Length: 170
Image: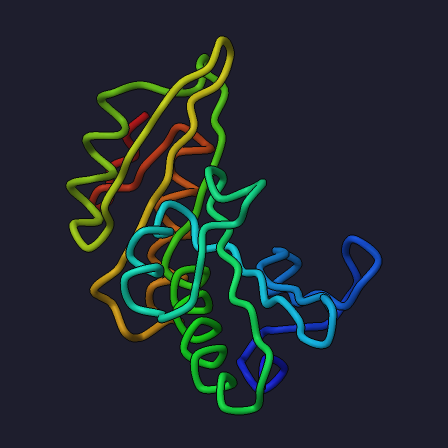
């Protein structure tokens, strides 16, 4: 099921099979006493997933970092697993996180990028040397379009420049 999703590839993490979207690790499973756990990365959407996927729990160790776990012990639970995978895939296609050096960042540039890309929601935080920016397009159902917009906004923020009409703003 996972490999049928566009852009998803198989690899290994933590000694087991894992799944990636464009080299971003987002899902894996591992056996546990006659059943298995499906674990997926859902960014800050843990509570939303827990409310929509019966049986899903915040990952005991990594829930605060955006991971959820779904115990699977019978074939009838595969429907819930599929729902979780589809939600996770949607999040990974409509969310992008970038880190920008503080020297390259300005609130003015972020305001201009926000104005140019009204379909994208922006959240930022900072550490000593860097600004972390999370961009989301939750309303877009065209994942390819979402990806194009996210990449354009990320490029402008990373380069510290934005084209507005025929004028370059930095």
